[in-house]
Amino acid sequence: MYVDSEMYIIHCDLDAFFASVEQRDNPALRGKPVIVGGTPQSRGVVSTCSYEARRYGVKSAMPASQALKLCPQGVFLPVDMKRYQEASRQVFKILSDYTPLMEPLSIDEAFLDVKGCTSLFGPSEAIARTIKERVLTEVGLTISTGISYNKFLAKLASELGKPDGFKVITRQDARSVLDPLPVSCLWGVGKKTRQVFEHMGINTIGEVRQVPLELLEKRLGSSARAILDMACGIDLRPLDTARTARSMGREITFEQDVLEPEQLEKALLQFSEYLGQKLRTAALKARSVTIKVRYHDFKTVTRSRTMTPSIFSDLDIYDTAVSLLRETHPGKVRLIGLQVELDYPRELVQGSIFETGETEENLLIDKTIDLLRERFGNDAITRASLMKK
Ligand SMILES: [Mg+2]
Image (spheres, rainbow, N blue to C red):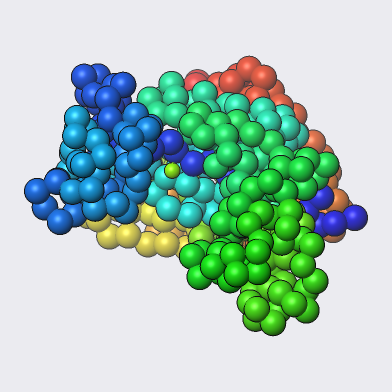
């Protein structure tokens, strides 16, 4: 079995991002050719343009003066990065609800690996549908999603489906989807490589696959292997988790400074349940637990503990956090935070219950709570100590 045999990679890409934010915020711009980037008077280039402008042949990176010639009625707007970053932040937050295994590619684009999240959120298709729906209703933008068994095909799927795309490329479909496409659709094939192919009389991906590797190596050198693999729908690159969050955490600043340890422990329990659920959702574990305590005079201390073996149950996180809290000196607390460092590479939780030192019972309780929350919402179930007295 191939390591990439299952459909767990989702590529998410906002449609005509900057232009869409402008159209969202100013209804008068909807349906109009919006061109974000340099003004025609300046020597700037087009950053993003709406689909209405693309119909006139306007493209990203094109000089604004040329865009004006192609589309004289175009609405030219300056880049307003602050608003785009805010929208991007909202979208990435939605994406991170479904997995912490995310590789952001740019301000409007990311890969998700949802393996290990499907028992909680349903199959990849359901996750992609939910993401599309939430981005539309919560942020007011359309996002295209592509699902496949590797990064190359997932990204290709989202491109082919645009705008508002939802496309799946299965192992069975891969070759028939790839064959008629131009070689430039292969990841990493730029102008130079395309010209090499042109000289060889090769225009489509299907034709690339007919070329013997040795010949391709003579013409393209060391990149030949990867290009030929991609033409066959093979891409074994994992998500670049170095770009993914290394840790996750929660903190709260109290409205009034807190003296009672019980109240601090209560906050830690809430955080532990939240983080534990996130970990299990993603089939990840925590390799360390850190608490942060900020006192009324803003003096801040942190205490950390490395966990061997790594942990993922609410109660193990909570117990560790509380014992770390006891190492701090008592005082009036303004803020308390809890953070776990994620354990990569992950292994599936189900396979290793008995090796981790988790008690089976704890895990069962956690899983039941996760399921109930999934079905009835986060407030449906709370540990007894969290109940209001
Ligand atoms: Mg985009």
